[in-house]
Every structure is written in structure tokens, then in C-alpha cells.
Picture 1 (tube, rainbow, N blue to C red):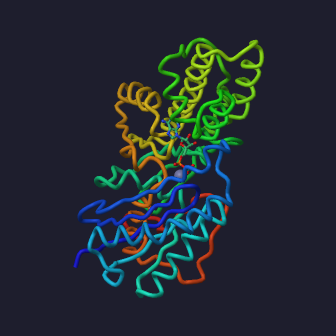
Picture 2 (cartoon, helix red, strand yellow):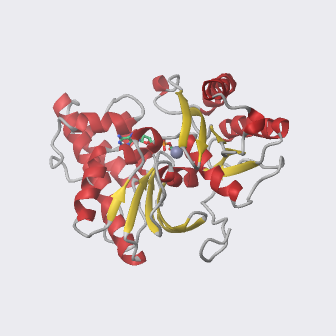
Length: 343
Ligand code: KG4
Ligand code: ZN
């Protein structure tokens, strides 16, 4: 019988359920975004966990009903157990455990970053080894993936994540939350060369990132004008976006050189950014490094990527018991043994 894997993702402010089959790909995916955070200009953890509590069960029921799948027929359940907001993670984790226990279905806890990476495997096999740039609201990392389950961190941010920089700058400019899509939209009407904002750690020679200086530079620039006109706001948005994508590209080029990887993937919410995609494709094409990214709905938080990751863990025999806990922080770790195709 075909293996159907259920994914559950509640690590931040999106409640998501999906079914994935290694044979058919994504069978069904539903994400409910929480809009209550907008008026606070950021995610409020208490609101997020309460909202997951309300939304998760009906979302799961819709996914099972619409797909005609039954709990007992599932080959496995994957749930994000970290990193993320503890209250939010625990809602998904408790729910997944109850399902696994009640349906006697194997359970696998999935690291959120591995989920983002494997969003690239949702529509076909990965071309490995590859370098992956994971850029989201909580993470900015360059990770070498030898194969699924084997990861080496090549570079990380020392302070803010790229998405966090977009969000904080968006807030400074009075734009709707989250800042990334808002800045991208406003940047289209602005001049990216208007301001030369700092590119953190540009001359360090390494693959680490830093975005906190950019946020301060933007704040000082805005404060140096008597008022924030639409024209100024758009120029700042375009110049700040350029600084972020430029340093993401520069560090990716160094990491490609260091690792010798000939394949490059983008992952995470910031991978939805059109300017980042355009610049990456332009530069990497010239170096004969193939670059790709997940389709838009799988760049941001979603459960399809978690179901896909779970299908790999569970088929390799790596499962978790009901003692599985959540974790707020922690880097991705390899779970597959070294060597070709060893689980
Ligand atoms: O992966 P994700 O949904 O959640 C985390 O795991 O953090 O990423 C959310 C982040 C937010 O910071 C948001 O501003 C950013 O992704 N983002 C974008 C775009 N769409 C979402 N950043 C730049 N350009 C976009 N188009
Ligand atoms: Zn994420």
C-alpha cells in the first residue's frame, strides 16, 4: 500500500497540516495564517499558541476528510518539535503524539530547519551533495547537505536573521507585518542605489552573517530626515533589500567555493524574495551552479515539508516515542550515518 505521511507544523504563527506521499508528492496541504498578530507588529507567543489550539483540530479534520485518508492507514506522522516558540510547539507536539498513540502510527520529531531544506524535495528528488541557504524569520544559515540526514553548518548569523532584519526594518518604515513581502512590494517603486547601507561581515572572509548593524543604519538614516515621505520610504526599502540580498549572495559564493558544491538550493520565508532569486540566478548561472527554490507556498512555514522530512526519517527507521519533547533553540544535527545511503 502507498505510504501516506501526515505533517504537523505549529512552531510559530502558522498552523499547518499536510499529507505527503513519496510516490505522489504533496497530496493535500492546508495552512491557516494567524492574522491577529498584525496589529502588534510581531508574533505574540501567547496569542500564537491559543490560536493553534483553536485551529489545529479542525484543520486536521479537513485534511483527512478532503483526502479520504484515515488515521490508521497512515505510514507515519511528522511534527516540528523545535526550534520555535515553546507554547506553539507543544500544541502541535501533543496533538501529534495523541494521533500516533491512538492510531498506532510511527511518530518522528522534525527539526524545523530540516523541514525548510526538504521543501526542495517536495516536487522531485534532490540533486546532492548541495549547499542550502536557509533564510527565514528565525534563521540564516548556509548548510552543506551531503545527503538527506547528513548536514554540515558552513555559516550562521551572529545576531539577527535575514527575515528578522526585513521585519524590523518594515516596522521602522511603518509597513504591515511581516516586513519581508511589504519591503519587496515598496522596493519596486524605490531606488536601490539611493543609500549605501552596510553589508555585515562583508570583509571577514568567512561565511557568517550579521544584520544588526543594518537595522541601526536604517533607523539613523530615517531619523536624519524631517519626515518619512513615501519616496524616502521606498528608497530606504529598496536600498535595505539590496543590502540584505547582496550579502546573502556574497556569503553564498564564498561557501560554494569553500565546499566545492555545484548545486545550490534556497529555503525559508526569505527565499520568496524576487530580488534574491533574480540575483542568485544571475550570478550562479555564470558559474554553472544550478540554483532552485521551493514554490512560494512551501518557502514559508508549512506542514508539507515536515511530512516529507518524516517520510525520510521513518523509512530509514528513525522514529520517536511518546517521551519526545520540544526545544526552543538548537542547531540542525545529522541523524543518518556517514557513508552512501546508510540510514
Ligand atoms: O520560514 P518562515 O515562514 O518562518 C520562519 O521560520 O521564520 O519565514 C518568515 C520570514 C519573515 O521574516 C518574512 O518577513 C520573510 O520570511 N519573508 C520575506 C518574503 N516573504 C516572507 N522576506 C523577504 N521577501 C519576501 N517576499
Ligand atoms: Zn520557518
